[in-house]
Amino acid sequence: MKKILVTGATGQLGSELTITLRNRYGAENVFAAADKKPALNELTQSGPYYCLDVRDMPVLNQIVETNNIDTIFHLAALLSAVAEQQPQQAWDVNMNGLINVLEISRMHQCALFFPSSIAAFGTETPSMDTPQDTIQRPTTIYGITKVSGELLCDYYHHRFDVDARGLRYPGLISSKTKPGGGTTDYAVDIFYAAIKSQHYECFLRADTQLDMMYMPDAIDAAITLMTADSTQLKHRNAFNVTAMNFTPQQLAAEIQKHIPEFTIAYNVDPLRQAIADSWPRHMNDSAAKAEWDWQAQFDLQAMVKDMLEKIALN
Ligand code: SER
Image (cartoon, rainbow, N blue to C red; front, side, top):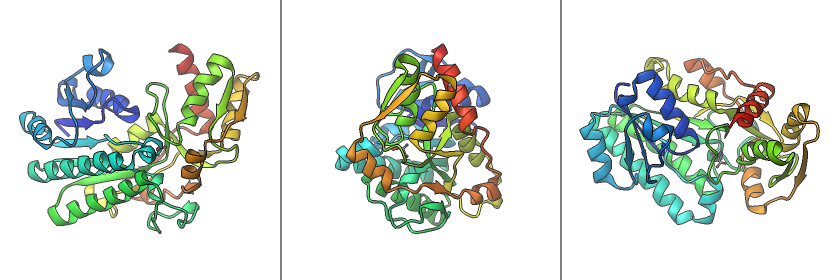
C-alpha cells in the first residue's frame, strides 16, 4: 500500500480509516473521495480530497491514474435502512460503484478492500454461530448488494487476478462520525442521548441480539486483512468478523453502570426491526482468526467506557 484511495471517505468508517491510513502511510499518499462537497474538517485539511460519485467511471479512472493509486478501500454505499426506502438507488450506487472500482482495479492492478456485512445473510442462515460458508439468501436490497459484491470480488480475483479482499462487518460503533441510515445505528445514537438527556427511545426491540464492533477494531481489521500474507488466505473475501454481541437492553444496562439515571424506552420501527430480525444473532469468525490472526481488542465493557469518555469530550 503506497498510494491509497478511500471512497465513501466522509462516512462512519471512511472518515476514521482515512485518518489512520494517513498517519501510517503519509498524508500525501492517502486520497479521500466522497460525493459530498468537502467541509473544512480534519479529513479535508489533513490530505488530498476529491469529490467523486463512484458511478462516474471517467472521474474515478482519472483519480487513480493521476495519482498512481495501488490500493482502493471502497466504502461508498447506501446502508440497510436508507437502501430499503430507495431500492433502485441502492442497487445503482452499491453495484455500479463496485463494478467500476473492480474494473479500475483490474485495469490498474490495484488491490481492493470491499466491506460486506451481517446483512449478507438472511432468515434461512443459521442464526447462532453463523458459519463462514453457509446459506445466504438476504431479504433486503442492501443484503442483496452485499452478497453480489462478495461474489463479484471473488470472481474478479479468480478470473482477473485482482487482489480483492473483504470482511463481513457487524454493526459499527464510533465516537467520531455517526452512521448514516443503518439498522444498527441505535448502538451509536444511544450514547449521545445518554449524555445529553439521560434517556433514549430505541427503534429496535429490547431483545434484538446482534454482533457489533468498536471502530478501532473495525479499522484494524481492514488494514490487517489488506496487509496479510496472501498465501495464508483461503477465503480472501467476506470474512465473518465480530467483537461483541448484545441486545439494546444489555447495552442500556452497561451504560447505566456509568450513568445510573439513564433510562431506555422502546418505540419499535417495523422496517428496521424486520431488517434486524432477518440477520444472524452471532457470527462465527474462526476463519478470520485462523487465516490472518483476527483478534478484537474491545468488548462491551471496554467499548461503553471509551464511548462515554470520548463523547463527553466532544
Ligand atoms: N450497520 C449496517 C447497517 O445497519 C450493517 O452493515 O446497515
